[in-house]
Length: 229
Image 1 (cartoon, rainbow, N blue to C red):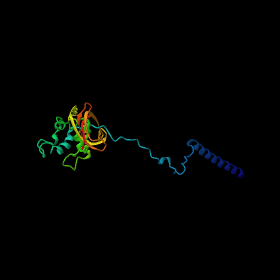
Image 2: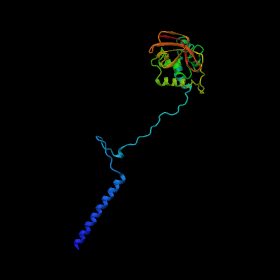
Image 3: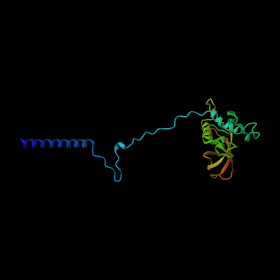
Image 4: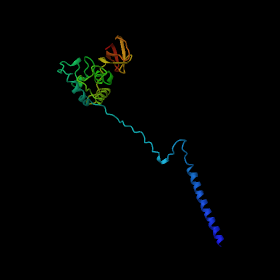
């Protein structure tokens, strides 16, 4: 009897071991072989790899700029000189900067070209492309944020506080100072030569020049005279 008990016990243990082995083989068959790290690389557990978050755009739709915040930047700094009774007497170069109408006035020349900051001498002066840089009592000059505000307002068509863009003054005279970034390009602004245009000096990139011309129907600058400064 004792021999039969021993044999039964041995058979039971063997069966249990076989069952565990079969379960392990089944698990390996389902899950597949364990991942093998590349030579020289440390093995990383799958749960340790963080998911990559989706890209999020930080920029949203912008509203069209109005004149009021631009007036708060330009009028206080410009009108002290550029007004009929400024501290320099008559407004320098005939430019008056006391409000929307005077900034956009273009009887003598256009100082602001709606939609074209680089063709607008006001923007070029506050940016320092054209000299002397304005405001004349600077430094400090306008901040980068203030200059950007003015540039975006001009790009939007120089609208008034009702959001109405200013008309393009086609045929108006312009006078722009700056540096040739390429032949027939003023600080990135393309130029076109009018028939019989006066060119005084060489059109060499890096040269400071003064451009006089007129505004075309598409906002292009047609040069009538260009000279080195």
